[in-house]
Length: 427
Image 1 (tube, rainbow, N blue to C red):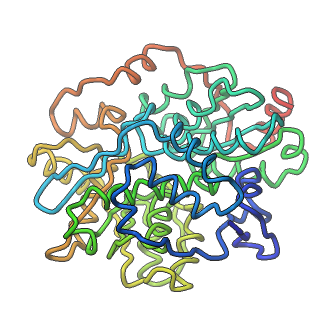
Image 2: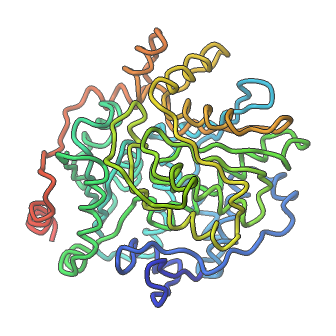
């Protein structure tokens, strides 16, 4: 796989280099020069999830890794279920929360860990990432106690759920967590500053596990194919997928799937009131506002890092603007959607409800609709119980984490302080 930096086309890298580098020059993200279609899609849908995922990833990565190596990596990384549940007639929920940290980020985090194990050959690596909720836990658990790897996680203090937080701030050892006085965008800005700092990059062997890392994206392509495979055959050609969108990596992966041959008719990137992309789709003016806090905190992002990748595919006609929708959903509508889904016998947390709402808005009559459940409802226990008037059972991984003390350190929204801390502790 050959990739280039979307902000500096002179920087050309291989897949291995892109995974090890993370972010390109001028804070640009790497993206493939081209995406070739898979052959014999129908045969792919007859395969099991792990086998099919191995074929897809080998197709995307190319000859940089032997097919049997990729298959071994996938077998280790994707060792949990993906479930498609019919919620109402012709409308399905893709449950992506059956991994160890109960969120879709487990797919990307675990595959990235396998990639770095193959590529780094014992070199020191420091993974620096910002999280708006679920990335932190997935990355922390994927790399916990891995030799020669330190993980540094920045999160906005008091702006993610306690369950989300405890899943990564209670581990210790090689997992270092900082509660930043600011928003997710502030955390993301600090990460970007570190990647522009040559001394920090060199001395720490810096890498990022945010969805800016291409290994995260290619992992997520796989579960969209699994969603289509689980649909009745007669519904596959006309599917419409709605993705709850914050940093836009997840919908980017869905679009990559469509470009390489996944039969999907429409994609919806549904946001909360942080509506930079929905407004851009109306007037093509990029104008981020101040980030607003919401029930769907993992989507509280005003400057999505992955939008340049999505826009690249749209602007180059790899995927049609006419088949791409982006709608914002306010807080009251989010709660109404949660209650409507409950009436159909299903429990959805806020992000899932937003995806459902976006799907219902633009779903054509007769089409099969798929909306994503990106996290287990118990990760948002307080808001779900309050809005729906129910009491949730707590899954064991969450119950265990909640019982442990938080090991995170508070830090101001100041890169100079973070820089000093990292160089003193990890260099």
